[in-house]
Amino acid sequence: MSDILLQADKLAVTYTSTRGPVVALQDLSTRLHQGEFLSVLGPSGCGKSTLLKVVAGLLRPSGGSVTLAGAPITGPRPDVGIVFQQPTLLPWQTVLDNVLLPVRTLGMDLAAGRDKAMQLLKLVGLDKFARHYPNELSGGMQQRVGIARGIIHDPTLLLMDEPFAALDAMTREHMMLELQRIWMATGKSVVFITHSIPEAVFLSDRIAVLSARPGRTIREVEIDLPRPRTLATMADPRFTEICNELRALFTDLVKFD
Amino acid sequence: MNLMHERLKTVLYPLITFAVLLAVWEIAIRVFKVPNFILPTPVSVVQALYRGYVEGLYWQHFFFTLQSMLFGYLLGCTLAFMLGCLFAESRTFERMLYPFVVALQSMPKVALAPLIIVWFGFGIESKIVMVALVCFFPMFINTAMGLKHTNPALLDLMNAFSASRWHILTRIKIPSAAGHIFAGLQIAIVLGLIGAVVAEFVSSTKGLGHLINASAVNLETNTMFAALLSLAVLGILGSQVVRLLHAKVVFWDKQASSQAIVSE
Ligand SMILES: Nc1ncnc2c1ncn2[C@@H]1O[C@H](COP(=O)(O)OP(=O)(O)OP(=O)(O)O)[C@@H](O)[C@H]1O
Ligand SMILES: [Mg+2]
Image (cartoon, rainbow over all chains, first blue to last red; front, side, top):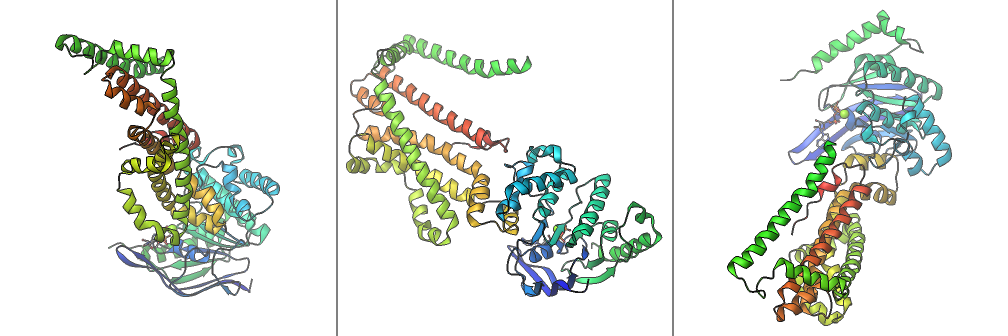
C-alpha cells in the first residue's frame, strides 16, 4: 500500500468560456496508492469531474502536474477505465455492444470479450437486456451499462464519476457491495467521485474532501473500518461518527450566498 | 379500430381536397369559357396522360428525367459525402476550401446550366452533371456540419477508450450526424429534380422538362400539365424513398423522419 500510483501536485485547471476564464481547480494536491480506494467528496461544481478528466488524459491541466506510475499523463491510456457522470451510451448500439466498446477500440479478443460482457451485465442485473437499445432503458439501468463498460477491459486504475447517483437506494447498496467485492478480488486502484457521504465512507480507504470552486483538497480522511464491509457496517457507531464528522465539514462548504 | 379510422382520414381528406379542386377547375373553365390553350380541362389532362403513358410516348421522357436524376443524385451526394468528411476531419482542408464554399453556396447553381450544356453536350451527361452539381452543396454542408457537431461527451468517451480516428469517424461521428446527413439527402432530392428540369429547359431532346418546353411552343397546355404531374410524382416518390430510408437507418431517433424539413 505504500507505492504511489497517482500523484497530483498543485494541479490547476482553467476553462476558457465565452463568459471569460473559469478556474475549476487550483492548487489541488492528492495522491493514490497502488490498490487504494480513494473517494473524492466535494460540493457540486467544485471541479470533481474536471479532476477525473485530467486523470483520464482527456483534459490538459493549466498548471501543476499529475503523474501516473511516475510518468506525466499525456493522454488516455488503455489500462485506465472510466465511468462517466452521464451514462454516455451510443444510442445506435445494443447494450451488449455498448459494453463491448473498449474491447473493440483496444483491439481485444471479441469472443472472450462477449463472455466477459455477459458476465458483467449479469453482475449489474441487466443480462436480460443485452439485446436492447439504450433508449429502452431507464436512467439507472443506463448508468449500470456504463459501469460494466468501464471495467470490461480489466483496467488497473478505475475512475468513477458519481456512478451510483442515478440508482435507487436498494440497487445502490447492492452495487456498493459488488464494487467492494470486485475491488477486493482484483486489487484495482479506484478514484471514486461522489456526493454521498455514507457511500464514500463505506467504500473508501481514504476520502479527499474538496473545497467549493476552485476546488482544492481541504481535508483527507483515512477510513480504517475493517474489510469486507457489510450492510451491518453502516450501523457501526464508528461509521456514523465518521459520517457525522464529514457532514459537519460539508455544511460549512456548501453555503450559497 | 380508431387507428384505422385515423389512417382512413389521412388518405381520404386530401382526396376530398383534390376532388373539390378538380371540380372548381372544370366549372371555372366552362363558366368563364377559358380557351383550352390557356388552361386545359382536367379531362383533357387525363386524356393526355392516358395517351402518353398507355400508348407509351411519355415513358422515354419520364425515364430520361428519372435516370439523370438518379445518377446525378448518387454522383453528387457520394462526392459531397466524401468531401464533407474530409472537410470536417482536416483543419488544413477546411481552411483551404472554406472561402470558396461560402462563395459558391450563395450562387444559384442552376445559372450554370448553359455552360454545362456547352461542356457536356445535349445528351444525358449534361443533365447528370447538372443534377450532381445542385445536389452537392446541401449534402456537403449538412455532412460537414453534422460531423462537426458530434456530442463532445461521446468524443470524450471514445478518446478515453483509446479509439482510433477512423473508428471515431465511422462508428461515432457518422452515426451521430445521420440526422443531418439525411436532411441533406432530402434537400438534395428536391433540388436535384429542379436541376434536371432546368438543364432540360436549356437544351435537350428528351425528358419531362423538355416535354414542357416543346409543348409550350405549340400551346399544348394539356401536355404541359401532364408533364408537370409526372414531375410531381417523381419528386414525391424520391422524397418518400429518402424519408423511409431515414426512418429505417436512423432507427434510434424516434423523430428522425419528421426532422428533415425541406425548403427551397
Ligand atoms: N467546458 C467547460 N467550460 C467552462 N466551464 C466549465 C466547463 N466544464 C466545467 N466547467 C466549470 O467548471 C466547474 C467545475 O465543473 P465540474 O464538472 O468539474 O464540477 P463537478 O464537481 O463535477 O460538479 P458536479 O458534482 O455537479 O458534477 C464548474 O463551475 C463548471 O461551471
Ligand atoms: Mg461532475
